[in-house]
Image (cartoon, rainbow, N blue to C red; front, side):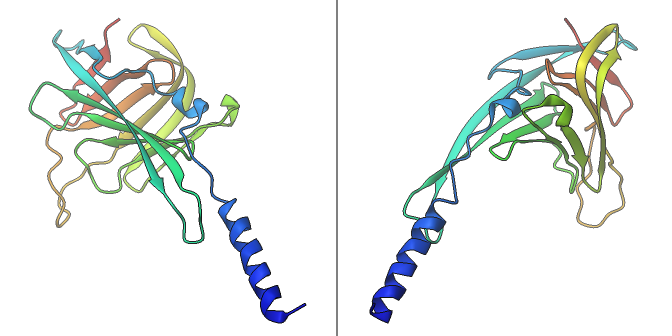
Length: 202
């Protein structure tokens, strides 16, 4: 066989093989199982120390990005769903939860504090799910968590470690420092940097 023809054939086979490697990445159903709010939901929270209540608005944005690889003849879709909780008060006391096609749920404070992220690695088998944290966060994944008179089957509790004195880092203001996020119910409690804890009202 002609060496040039052999080379072209090998190149064609390689390109076809490489194009089959990348696949569409919709957010898996076991990852979406952690998404419990719909766009526009209003959640009420109560501070038992003061008796005050406040609401959080849930906003859900579903984005699919289409891209093609270097050696790709076919485009591929990658889905990201972003759930944002915001308070009506003028502060950064909110939470951003991102569900992606890699099967991860990334939780960040709205204050965008550097390197503060808690990530849930989801799995088809729930006992294989686990949580990881970044340099300035800590988290636990627990079963049967009792909060303010109610038990939640599966909860990620986390803390964003805010501290001042770093150059080029904005003040956290009255940000959300601790959170409790339930697989069945979404955000169920949080503590702000002022030390006040708010629990979901049912």
